[in-house]
Amino acid sequence: MPVIESSFVVRAPLNVVWEFHNDPRALPRIMPALFGLTVEGYDRPLRAGSRVNLSMGVGPLRQPWSLQVIAYEPPHQFVDEQLPGQGPFKHWRHMHRFEPADEGTCIIDHIEYELPLGVLGKIAACIGGALMMKVIFASRRTATRKALESPAHSGPTTGVSV
Image (cartoon, rainbow, N blue to C red; front, top):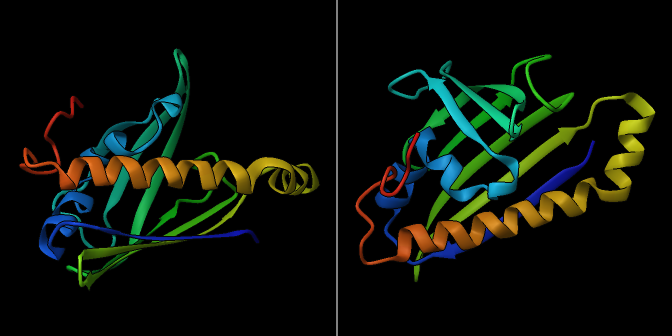
């Protein structure tokens, strides 16, 4: 199963970084616009067992995506998994970890994923899946820094229209 790992430091305190990532409404802000990610709903407050319902796609071609938080350890970590058959992946597990760093907070992402379609999915993952995931996380890194390092940052929903 493919694994993607990404880590970077953002110049913001741990509590600010946690609060930003703890609000699903911030997700469209850090995902590439190409995916048209929308938050359809989520359980409040987030905790282990909470569901987050998203959709993604272009125009009228939308793919629902339902995730469930399976581990929740504020302010250091949460893990979400795609509910079986309720999203674009055969398997998706994303560990979000936050650790204090000299310059701010280190954000660590660990993703295990599997594309659908059996052998065809494995071929697609080899050809472009890993590259696509690296591009997505490079974009997330830039957008997260922009959101959290700006002097005007006032919370996860600043500038978000959901």
